[in-house]
Length: 591
Image (cartoon, rainbow, N blue to C red; front, side):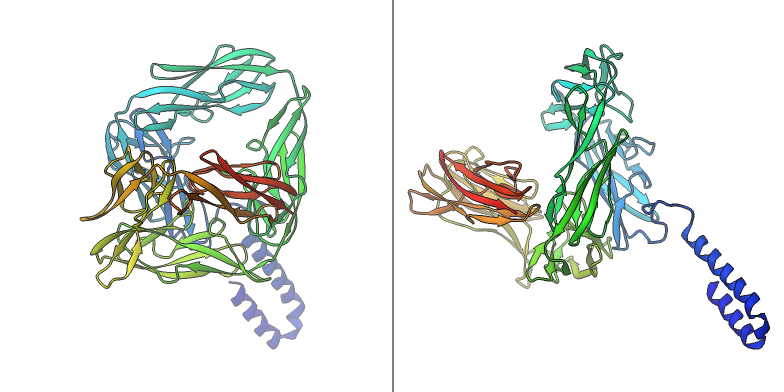
């Protein structure tokens, strides 16, 4: 519209110069109206996308097997043409292929929540803008064994809220029952607790005093003693305060409130978060990423938290080399139907070298009917084959150019399976070994299918094998003896023998030693043990890790991440690893 108007006016200028001033005013007015009409009236820069088409949907769930009478929330993540992804749980149309087994809500505030009604398996569908995705949900007839709450007791200032959680123990494992439990307060004039779908388990201090909160599920109940103190919020602070963080990292900020009673509370989930310069660093403000800062470019930005009329600011200095580009590996993968693949992203640094950014980029698949790729926490970059064909896997980070790889899903079957490494020497009790499963195609090309096969130990009291999660295939020695470790996929199988022997640990070695990192950066340590058979074995995933200064650096003991240290603030910490009553240590300096 604007182009044709300008074209006509230019012709008139040539034919009748005397009309130039009048028509020029028309052009200015038209352009002005066009600009304002195009911008719209909203001042919200993060209003929902209305012009980039949706290309795929991903459904994530805390669990896909739940007990009858319980529920779990589903999250729908929409990928928009590979440019960005966002949560669209409230926008998709949810449905169940068998509503007698499990129902799914389309009503706020429980939209996307699945409720188990009867034992069985059903598919839950999410559909939006012509795109549809499904997830299998299984309902069991497990009975509750115990009900626990967190925290077991609570103390909070008057006028402040906190979230209580209820966990049910079932034969098949633990489940979050916060939403499914019935909540009540003995003295709601002292502290009230939410029992509506929008506020289940939300505890609020009303007046000074003591009361009890009950959580009930069926005939099982538990009680939480609660004390409410007379106090007002006096100040709000953020930590870390004015930090220097490495570029291209994710770092959790926290908000702390100080009350007139002298009590302090973590208000991270309560405050509204913002960044003054989102090209330097962005900060999460949704329920699942409150306060999570992602650094994108060197520079300064103000991270702000606002709550209860108070605002706190932490000036963030992002240091290090800017990224000049991205790369993805593997470069041109081929995977079989019913398998998955981990794609890794690396950022090239202008100063040289590279850095892993798999958990920071936004992932997309140009053809999700062939293969989908996850943007969910803990699963980012995980590709799942859907149908034979080709698709491009893309990654975007900040203002860097988008990169992609071509991925092929083949209907060709595997002709053989293999477990590696097939090592003859035994495993000491309480130690573990990571095994890998490989599938061979007819042309002898190979695919890692460790997370797609079913693992089994024929003597689980001798050695167990992990069959879920990223540590799938990790075998752990339990008692002296022998077992077979087996894998199955489709109609194929393979096995290796494994023995566990009572070996004596002689020494430990830790690497690297005496290293330096910038706050926000991570460092993986490796622990090696030498045993009395003269062999060295890696014990990184089996040791207990500690840091002498948890405010300077922390180190993980979480499964799959043991031995990963992270710098938090300037200083020096002693990193210690302990296994079988021996320990070794080194220093880690944080700049």
